Amino acid sequence: MSTIWNAVTFPFRMIPWWGYLLILSILAWLGRNVLLIIATIIFFHPVPIPPLFQGEPETVLQARMQDLDHFGHVRRNERSFTPEQRQAFGGAIDALGERAGELTDAGFQLELARLQAMIDNGHSNASATRMVQSLPRLPIRSVWMSGELRILRALPGYEALLGAEITGINGVAADNAIWLFRDAFGGVDDWYLTFAPLLLETPAYLDAVGLGEGPVRIDYIGRDGQHGVVELHPVDPSADTSRISSGDLLMPWMNESHDWVSFEPAGSPVYLGNPDNDYWYTAIPEDNAIFINLRANLDDASGETLVDWIDRATSEIRELSPRFIIVDQRFNSGGDLTRTEPMMVALSDIVGPNGRVYLLASGNTFSAGIVNLAMAEEAAPGRTFLVGEPIGDRLQFWAEGWWYSLPNSGFRARYSTGYYDLQNGCEGILICHWGSLRVFPVIVDDLDIDIPAPMTFDAYAAGRDPGMEAVLADISRNGGN
Image 1 (cartoon, one colour):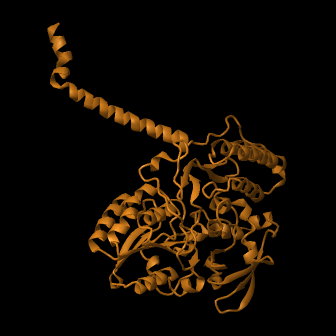
Image 2 (image 1 turned 90 degrees about the vertical axis):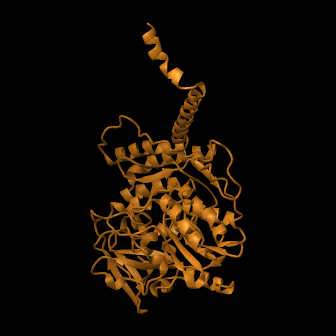
Image 3 (image 1 turned 135 degrees about the horizontal axis):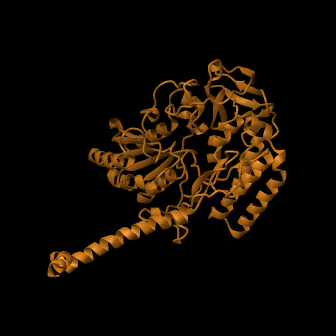
């Protein structure tokens, strides 16, 4: 009996009482974090559960009604809704159900997008890329650049249109046509204009807003200044097509498929460098400056995680002791804001009290990209300058949440569950996202552009960068080296 007792009590004789307290504390800490993760998923990332036992739809109308049943989870999970908005949203779903059988496939998706737009939140939008992905589209890709709709990609046989300005679509002026889908997307205009051309290039959506389906008449002004007209027929989507938004067309490192031909700018501006990397930096020794390019707040394919790169790059840049730092986030539409926080808050310290931080921004700067700007601005409000074009969202927005796809139409959108307020701070443990508590509050007066420098097509074609030109001019005025 004593042998059994000795074996059972052996751990208690070998480990002192405080050791057990330590073990219990560690287990409690681990349990707390596991519970925090579970609670975060429940509160901020609820997975949309489709209605059960729907079965295979036998008619188009039945398929759409099933989708609308599924769509109801947005009403339940979108946390930005007031009770009145939630009720109005539910009524709008019911109203769409009454005429769902009368719509074309594109028309039905457009109406779903308009329902999403009732939320009026940049993150809670339909995915324009998914809306057009399975439909025949024109053999050109365009982007809105400073008030002009420019063709930057084309299929073989249409290369002569590269660089042309589209002035009309089926008899409607391009600067009017671009706004025909505005009521289908919430948020600010600058963000909307980055993806609106996707719908203009899809005849089924042109038909849904009354511009006619089938061959599309394009009025344009060519690179030679001559006016022309061309009738374009839609092309079925390629199986190897990757998703791409119009705003990404300025980036040659994004591909739609290998068949497409891109407009090639003259020269090699620094911002188009390193096409295979989403994060990198280079020194500009003649101006005692460092240029940092952050195209995403996510890991790229370089093999070095963003967190590791941020740690390494911040240390290396600190050793270089630049007086000026330029951070280009004109193509950063978001990701994990906590990954870049150590660098953003360190920039002002690196350049010192007599240095300056320049933040390049555009309508593509969104979500975590915007928070990056705010973190840098908060760290040095008098020495940080926004350069370029207005950002893609308001300073109060809802994010987090989850993407969902409807089972029959394939319509894809998201609902949002975590609140961010970059001007006043966020209050409320069930409103503000817990995963960012170590970063927030981040509070700034505004993120207005201090030095306007829009990217025009003429500058892009010449291989110039108005944003960098404006920065270097300001550096020169402020002492350079």
